[in-house]
Length: 288
Ligand SMILES: Cc1ncc(COP(=O)(O)O)c(C=O)c1O
Image 1 (cartoon, helix red, strand yellow):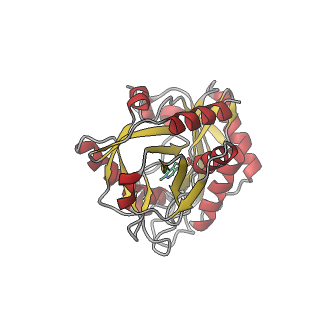
Image 2 (cartoon, helix red, strand yellow; image 1 turned 90 degrees about the vertical axis):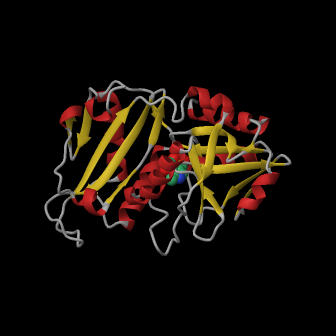
C-alpha cells in the first residue's frame, strides 16, 4: 500500500493547489507541538458530499472553540471541497479539511502564528475493511476515558483529542481487537475511538447521550432514519453493565458509515436485522 504522503494528486493549501507529495509544513508548526488544529472527515458519494454544510458548520464551531477561525466563509470551504474533488478526479471520496496554526512563533500564546487551511481528498472504501462488515468488528474496553467537557473541548473535532483514541486503539490492536469501546469520565459508555455507538434491545434503539464526545453527523442521521422507520430511540446515559442485555451493537461515523459489532471483550453479538436494515437505509440515503 502506498504511504498516504506518497500519493499522486493535488492538495488545496491556503488558496492554491499543491502537488500531493510537496504539501509540507515546517517541523516547528504550532499545530504539531501544541495541538492547535481542528479538522473534518466527510464523504462524497457519486460526486455529492453528504451533509457538507453540517460538516463545515462543525468545522467552524471547532475552529472558534480553539481560537482558530479562518479567513474563509463556509460557502468558500464548500467550493474548495468541490474543487479538490474535481482536481483529483474523484466522485466517491473521503475528504479531510484541516485548520491549524503555523510555524511563525512557538509559544503557548498562539495568536502570533498564522491560521492555515488545507483540504485533501482520496478514495477510501471501507474504514474497517470489507470482511469485518460481514462478521462484525471486535471491541475491547479502553483504559482511557473521554474527558469532562470542562477539562477538554469535547464538542470540537480537535486533533488533540484524538490522542486518547489513538493510544487506546493501538493497544486494542495489540490485544487482537479491532477497536475500543470507551467510557466517559463518569464511567458511562461514550463511543469508540473514531465512531459513535448504538445498541438494540427488544427492537428499541439506545445510544449514549453526547455529553462528553462528538455528536456525530452520522449518529444524528441514524437517529432520524430509525425514528422514520418507527423505532423508539433513546439517547441517554448507559452503564457498561447494561451491555449484557443488548441484542445488537453497531458503530456509526462518516468514515465507518454503519458497522456491526460482533464482539465486545468475550461477549458475542449477532449481526441482527435492525443493524442490517439501518446500514442499508444509510447507504441508500448517502447515495441518493
Ligand atoms: C471520535 C469520533 N466520534 C464520533 C465520530 C462520528 O462523527 P461523524 O458521524 O460526524 O463522522 C467521529 C468521526 O468523525 C469521531 O472521530
